[in-house]
Length: 360
Image 1 (cartoon, rainbow, N blue to C red):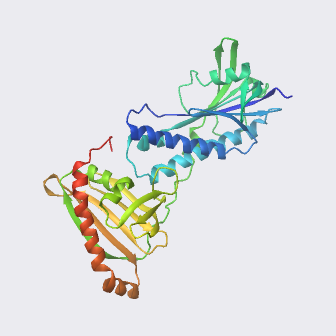
Image 2: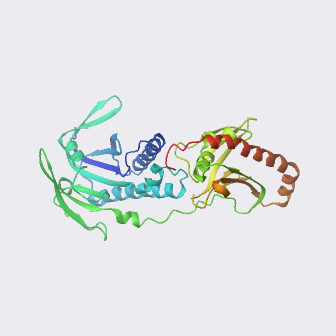
Image 3: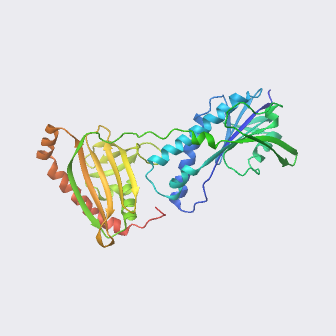
């Protein structure tokens, strides 16, 4: 039975301690998604021993990987981690502290080679051994920065860590443990993040559209409270005429591109996706939803109104088509406009009683 191998620990950090229930829940969702991203980025046959809070303990028995192959694995995980965060930051809707600060999360990777064995607890293979303890102790060190790759000298095997990337600079250090000094080298990884290309525009909005209905109403609340009430799906059925519920389709935090299902009171089910979002509470907040068949889009625009009030404008767009526009004006416009106006009226008592549960 092999008892020597690689220990590989990517560790996420950067979140502060949240006390608000929504922020705690959202931070948990974000970390969960990032852990899945790291697991999916594993392409060197690493096995998972366990997920330890914000870190994953990977291992692989046998001879150590070549340093270049190991770096490619670190690079892949690091870049996928930050691509995911960049995408979420550019498409997020929620403005809680967890969601806003997520883009600042960091990743460090600890790699060590040593002796350890496995033991099974039901369906899980747990690791035991002195070097497992050493790898965990290395997570706490004197390195000032938070995004780095640490390689112990056990893994380097007297081979200097050079020639991997032109920007890479290595420093040597050591960790004092109960079993002695553990020498290691480390290098910063922030350059990889700076080299990532910007997130592409998802191009989800109707490209050639015409406005067919527009209604608005002013409310005696601030712009953030109105926004919070309108954008959160759990309140939507309480005020939108004809809507029974909104169901989550993808189990992650909603953002531009995420899908959700509108279940209507007549039994109809309509798949929708969030097609745009703009957040500037000093000026206006705008987001839109488009049905998956791209038959129509609803734009929710929230602006400041006179006397400290806030205004919600609902605009309905359909694809530009003379025949479709004529039929809509003849058979649909009046009923839809009446329903939207009544929806805005039903929103008033809900938004008046809304208390923001967090900084939004």
